[in-house]
Amino acid sequence: MTMRSPLAPAIRLMRTVSRDSWYRGLVIVLTFLFYTSYHLSRKPISVVKSQLHRNCSEIPNPPANISENDTTWCSWAPFDGSNYKELLGSLDTSFLVAYAIGMFISGIFGERLPLRYYLSGGMVICGVFTAFLGLGYYWNIHALWYYILFQILNGLAQTTGWPSVVACMGNWFGKGKRGFIMGIWNSHTAVGNILGSLIAGAFVSTAWGLSFIVPGIIIASFGIISFFFLVEYPEDVGCSPPDQTDELKDQLEDAQVMNSSTENIFKNQTAPDLEESVSPQEPAEHPQAISFWGALRIPGVVEFSLCLLFAKLVSYTFLYWLPLYIANVAHFDPKTAGDMSTLFDAGGILGGILAGAVSDYTGGRAITCAVMLILTAPMLFVYNQFGQTAVSATVAMLIICGMLVNGPYSLITTAVSADLGTHESLRGNARALSTVTAIIDGSGSIGAALGPTLASVLSSKGWNYVFYMLIVADLLACLFLARLVYKEIKEICPCFKRARGFREL
Image (cartoon, rainbow, N blue to C red; front, side, top):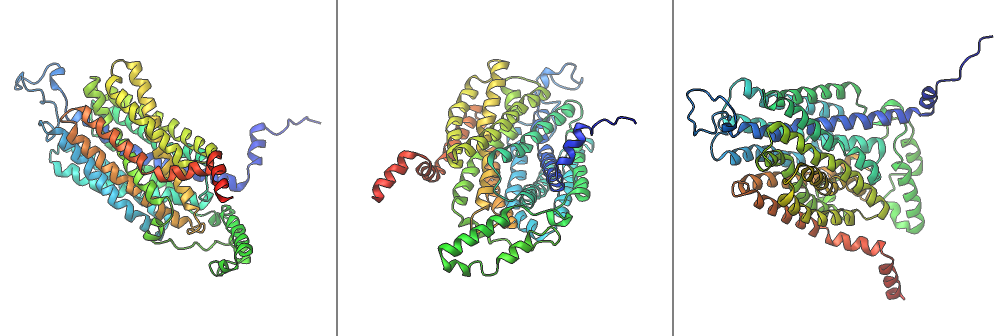
């Protein structure tokens, strides 16, 4: 009799994973890749900036008809003039203003349209508009309106991403995800920025049109993958819905015991209904979204929205202007400057995970954000003064600045939004989470539009003024969290609890 070897270890491991877990893992991977491609496609403009306006005197063998004093002969009109920073800033502003306006609207459309169609179509459209920016190189287009037009269209199309992936994660995992897990998942933002910089940097010095066309093809391809593979709801494939329905049932039973008047609130949601809603055989009824003003009344939404406005101002100023700053101050070539800027995004990955883990351990989301914001202000000053003195200093400070700047940004847009999405007024409504997320991220997008615009104006007077603006914005972001920080300190700190106990006695 032939001896048979035991089942392979990897196969045994695969068999221990449930069907639900496989689908949930698929959703995590897909949504991660999808939003990575969104950021990958919006990053090239920051890398290409340093190629659109160059110091041509550093290039050997200029054409014979070029004057020796002409240092802009290799620049791309209309960005070859002395006002090039304002023109480049107008590209950022047109994209970010369109993104900010569209974000408030996108959540509404995302809740009422099939999520798979909405996300897939948005990604394909983003790819087309991104590619058109690169085609301006091959079509030899030098009209400013052409680049502004497609920046606006791309900004509107980009708003299809964030509410969609958050809503999809909410459908599969609920909204009460812990900060550490959400911090890891949210690293797609930094991963997209890094890949976008590397891909754009690979072509920027030879044919910068490909710096846009290749990312455009990538995000459009992921849009096609989304159409064929994305599953919006676990019930659609016979999987169990997330646990928030069971949590809602427990809350209902507790509320009925403590206060019989709450029965009127939940009279349409009985225990049998809850049992039926978790059945994997029948699709659950998905509640309607709350109103815009109802979402604003949730405690903490306004404070975190205003905080994100200024935190995202700082983050997006780095996103759009860091490669040019490195090229101008440290005198690196465009490709090297783009590669160096990825260290800031690498630090952002670490910062998002660290912020989530610390806030999980302490239970203080606002406190974690405030501490990181407070530490950011002096670090920005140090980086501006000493960050370009040596390559090692540049590497270390870029990573540290990325951690401190993107840590609060990551925490607010993921774990904080998830916490607010579990508020009793939402009652486990994943579609309402899309509205709350759109409000918070839309407010942050206003700051994202203001930051690069102000940087384009202030940089003409000197980079020091840009960093002063970033420091002020950072402190304002911290200021708007003051009330929430005080509230969390009272809940966490034992001395406050003892003092409150004495007052009650």
